Image (cartoon, rainbow over all chains, first blue to last red; front, side, top):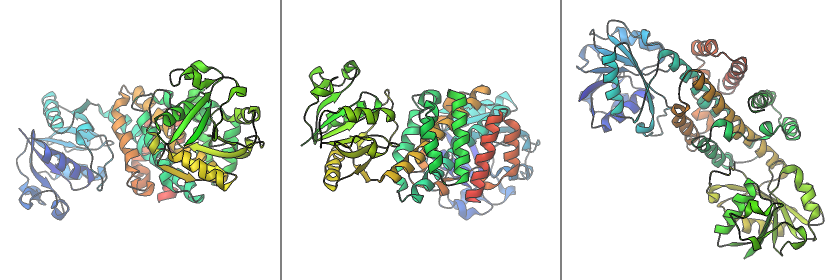
Length: 251
Length: 251
């Protein structure tokens, strides 16, 4: 059974710790946190360290820290030639100190502290320098997920960009919808079934097939009525740009 | 028990017919379709008419046709002083011919022919000229849904604008995500768990709480790397505008 150490105490680290804890096919031997209390609700204190010199022996070390700390953390590891991976969508594998064998273990999902996720459905994107290491990463990923992808650095960058569109920007459209509701005394709850269905549709239709609305129909009367209704210049600009983009795409 | 006639054969009409059919608390006495065959998979032929002069007696007539046909269809109804409603988010109640009592019965959801929906969770937005008619609409709406809202014409217009943002524009962001994937040889399936989770989060967090990503963190390095990566001018413009909007909103 593969032995793994998770380094970090943020959202990704905590969800990984929970997932490995549940798995019968990998052994979480230790976690590292600068502030061990952040992990005390997940692990016994003898499985947490805040001192790199006491890191346990393991087959794979997963650095799950913020992007700009990956290089430094990896350089502080007190060993050589072991397999060290990071979990970042937008950081190159080469940011990891070259004294160890390097790889990427990127779970493509949005994590929050307050909401549990089913890790078995989360795509894990793997990359490594060495084919043998890839097989080890694959075995580790399979221990917690059913969705494993071999993804190059260039593809990972594309995925991160795509994720910004479908996750961060989509959430911002929810925010605009919420603002329009509250400006008009409407509870945002009324929008939630529509939001869920919009996402659900994409599991059985392509985005092209699922596209509806005044832009798709080229319904100029409704588009103009909406622009007349919208007060905020920012919302007007976004409405105009996305309407134009739908018309260019689906027209 | 309220007796209802549905006029129309499109997506909304068909989903309403199915919902009333299932309901024990309302009676669908007839449906009107210019082309009766469009409804023959849902109703016996003796419950379908294509002739306005043979419309059955009912408590409520629901006009579920395209927005620009509502006025004309309502003027062709061969009776007066009955309750006639439309199902449109963006059409005023006054588009209905004034020879009848008027109202709105707007289900806030995206309907497609190929995907069933649970009507009990769909918000139905009601409006009427007369309070007595409102109570009748409420009883009818309750027969198929648990989410009933009293919504003015102005609020309905706001809802329709908000729906364009959270549904039509969100779907277009899925399309952009899908394009970025296919340009880089990545199956779009890899994005689907993230899309589902983005929508699911909004049921327990506000959009402000759920906002993450480089724009939210003001991570200029990642934003610039993404802009360098994106080839399409259109995608670049959308990325820049939505990033700026998130920073103005959450910054």
